[in-house]
Length: 214
Image (cartoon, rainbow, N blue to C red; front, side, top):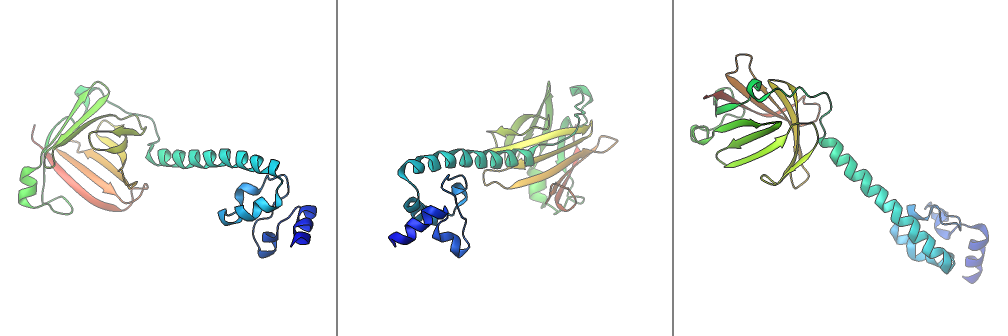
């Protein structure tokens, strides 16, 4: 065994390389990519002074991978494109809305449709949304960037594509991302809120159609 360890030091490769695992030179530069089960074996072939180097190399690698994961989640929430945010008085969404059972998918029950009301307002550049059953409300700046909404415990991004179209995405606390689009008809009397299964917005998951009350 001692002879094998000595030969390993001379060649700069561990015995794990013979089994198809990652091989590492004594500099330790490739060591962070080894599976965790090989760390104990790795310590046998490194001088004590090199163990500290390996640990220092692993820390920035872990931080880098964490930053990549965080960026990926944020990127999934971002809505790209120029903003067409209208002035509050020209925002087609402002008003109070009630469900249209016949046009919605899946079709809500009469009881659920009767209890549900949604109100949209503007406060400067912020969009205010409030609904009943369940009672919930939040405000958000539709600038295409993700914002955490404490009122609904979710991260949301939205962007005005035009004065009557808003696209967005919502990530809940479980990491599930929903992609959606809201559009007001040209006559301003109907709002269609569509949820999609993918960011391409090609497959509809559900569609809630609402009629203007005022």
